[in-house]
Length: 93
Image (cartoon, rainbow, N blue to C red; front, side, top):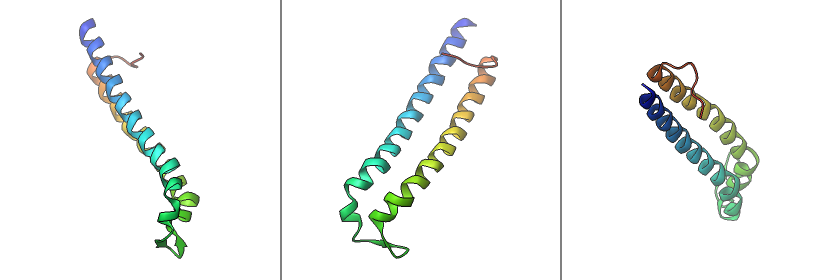
């Protein structure tokens, strides 16, 4: 029983780790990538604005908020699946 719980905890934290890595990569791209390539992106227009300006001013913020909600939704699914599998109310590291 203890081995099953330990295995479930390792699997839970492995999935949580990779979710965090993906979220950090998305954050990095929209924090630094958009601004780094802003000049090249400004040659494309979106809603009458240069794309680099639009992504820096609005797009990055939208992506950050959506990312937070999606990460929480996925993490809740991970937590709930391991809560049912382990029979524990809460899995702590």
